[in-house]
Length: 482
Image (cartoon, rainbow, N blue to C red; front, side, top):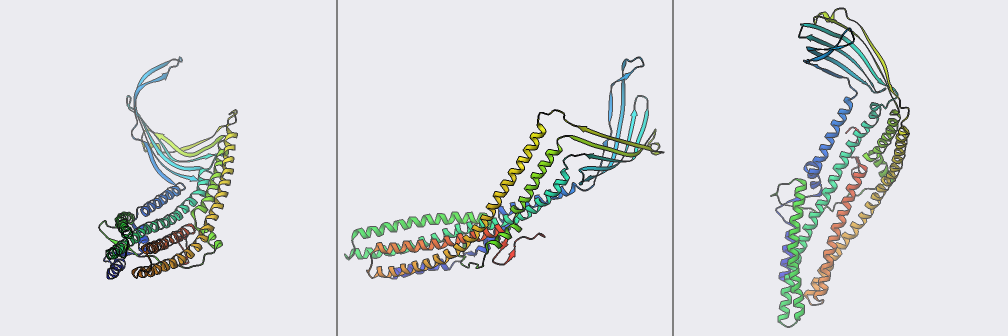
C-alpha cells in the first residue's frame, strides 16, 4: 500500500512540478507567428506582392530616359549609284553619334502613349573631314493603337484587386500558421501526456507486481495471475520507452517549427480555457464575404475573363496612328544646328487586316467566350463551396464545444472509477483483470479529452482564417487600411 501511495505521489510531482519552461498555447502561437519558417515565407510573399504592385503603378507614370549611340563607327565599301545607272562600290569611313532625351507618358484611357523628345546627331565622314550636325529642338509624338486591346485599362481594374487579395492572403496565411502551431502543440502535448501515463502505469504495475508476488508467496494468488502481472509490467516498460522516444521527436518538431534553441527544455500547459461566444451562420458568412481574399478573387477572375474576350476582339486586325510635330535644324557645328529650326511633321496610319485566315479570328473569339463561360460556372461552384465551408465550420464548432464538456466529464468519471477499482483491488474485492479494464478506460478518457481540445482549437483557428474575424474578442483580423 505504501509503495502505491509513493508511486502516485511521484507521478503527481512529475505532472505538476517542473523546473522547465511551461508554454501555453497562446505562447506557442505567438512564437510561431514571429519566427517560424512559414511566417517568414508569408512575410516575403507579402513584400514581393507589394513591389509587384509598385511596378504596376509605375506603368502609368511618365518615364524619362536618355539614349543614343556614342559613338557609332563604320568602315566599309558601300554602293554609289552612277549617272549611267551602274553602281560603283566606294570605300567609306564615318562616325555617326546620336544622343536623345525623351519623356514618355502612357495614356491609360486609350492605350497609347505621348512623348516629348529632344536629340542631337553628329555625322562625320573621316575621309574628307566632312562634319554635319542635326538637332531636334523638340519633338512631340503620339503613338495610338486603334481598336486594339488596351492592357493598361484592364490592368487598372485587376491589379488593385490582386494587391488587395495579397494583403488579405497574408492575414489568412498567418492564421494558418496559428493552426499549424496548434497541431504541433497538440502533437507534443499528446506525447507529453502519453509519457506521463506510461510513467504512472509503469510505477503502478511495478507495485501491483510486488503485491501479487507477495500474495503468490503466501498462497493467495495463482501463478498465472503473477505471470499476467509480470507480462503487463514488461509491456509498460516497453510503452514508456516508446513514449519517451515519441516525446523527444515531437519536442524536436515543435522546437524547430517555432525556432526555439535546441538546448531549451519546456513543457506545455493544457489549454482548457475555452472561449465561449455565439456564432451566427449568416453573420460568419457575411464576414467571410467581406474579408476573405477568395471572395474578391472571384471578381478579379471574372474581369480577367472579360479581358481575354476584349483581347480576342482586339487581335482581329491591327491599326495604328503615329503622328509627330517638332522643330529641327542642321549645321556644320553643334551651335549652328540650333539656329532657325524649321517645322517637322510626320503622320501615318498603319494597318494589317487579314482577308483570308481560315477562321482564326472566329476560333480565337469563340475560345475566349467559352473560357469566360467556363470561368462563370467554376466561380459559381466555388461560391457554393465557399458558403458551405463556412456554414459547416460554424456548426462543427458548436458540436466540438459539447464534445469537450462530455469528454472532460468522462475523464473525471474514469479517473474516479479507477481510484475506486484500485482500492477494491487492494482489499481483494476485484481481480487484476477488472483493475486493468479501469486503467485502460482512464487512459482512453484522458486521451479523448486531449483530442477533443485539439479538434476544438483547430476548428477555432480555422474559423478565424475563413472569416478573418475574431469572434472571441469581436474584432476584425484585417481592415482595408492594413
